[in-house]
Image 1 (cartoon, rainbow, N blue to C red):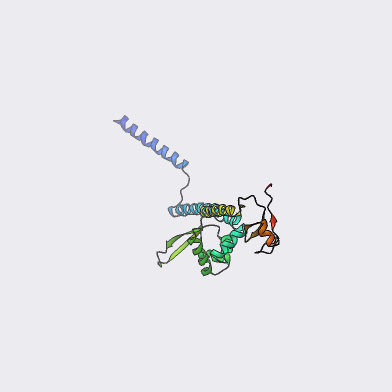
Image 2: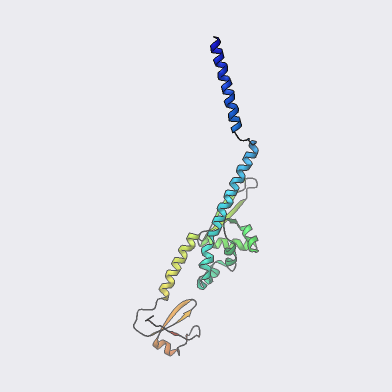
Length: 210
């Protein structure tokens, strides 16, 4: 009996020593509230990092390609509105219409007109959120680079087709009219004294050997 009691006592002593060792190895714990705050802070940092990466891409095709083409830029302004270029330059990520208006330094109502027209053309999209307290809806807007890329490819194809000279062996002359190439036969060019009737500029000879 005595040996059994001694064994139980020794087992409890071993367990205590092991627990003490584990306690020494464990780092100091933080209160639950503080742990939650730390986790939230980490999540916020991750979101900020992700949005920064997104911001570098969303309006990049507009700045690098679409707005640099004179003909395309003219069409965009005519279809979307006079503030479209200013809005797109500041439209670098997920953003509310009010924050975008502050960045552009123009009225929120005018920014909404541009956003709605971009949305109607398929260039922009929004996320709608409802405030549980007051029941109001807020909108977070973002550009769609894939839609802009597809539009540009289609535009480029049409432009190439329009710019291609007619398949004829006749001598041709050409002039640029509103960003498009217009061709004239020798007879047409001669009648107009080799001056473009629409722009008043001299017609250029089309060298097919280039």
